Image 1 (cartoon, rainbow, N blue to C red):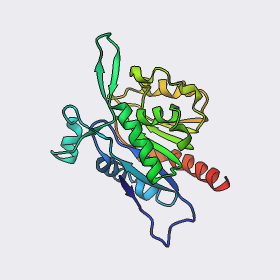
Image 2 (cartoon, rainbow, N blue to C red; image 1 turned 90 degrees about the vertical axis):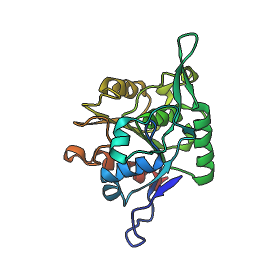
Image 3 (cartoon, rainbow, N blue to C red; image 1 turned 90 degrees about the horizontal axis):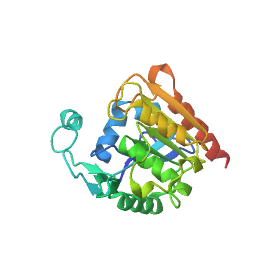
Length: 232
């Protein structure tokens, strides 16, 4: 569990959002922290949010994505929230998902309460699963989903994304080839019960700047959530 603290005691406001951050496919907490730092989230959001980076409990079951190896160097300790496996019936099974949900529950109990959950790529899908899951949905008041998609695992067939009532922000890359825009829009549409916002950026499968295209949508979303928790 890694916490990114970016504001000094002088700058720290009386209340900041405490957000559980879930990394992408076969990455890890340290990689996701670096990705958000490169996107300047630590500077742009430091006065309103504190991110707690969580490692998935499952070791990577295959090769580390080439872009991670190329950018962060060889030897990345890859972790995954699940491994997608095809069953004998031809359906898809998410091996390790139950363990990941239990790890999230444990971390929420030990290090929470958290205000919201943030996820990128597979972590974005994991965040959406958590928001739709009984037991975990009560842990979070909002979600930020970056390059996420609807779950396809048979373990999650009973989930109803339409029952998610927490506000959500969906950040989608126009040129994303790993999780194409249409899949992310599909998740956005499925969350019919949520007060939701969509923010697009021109890039691909990346963590974008918090004020991409000069529009501070992420900050505005989090500021509204902060006002809500301060008023509760």
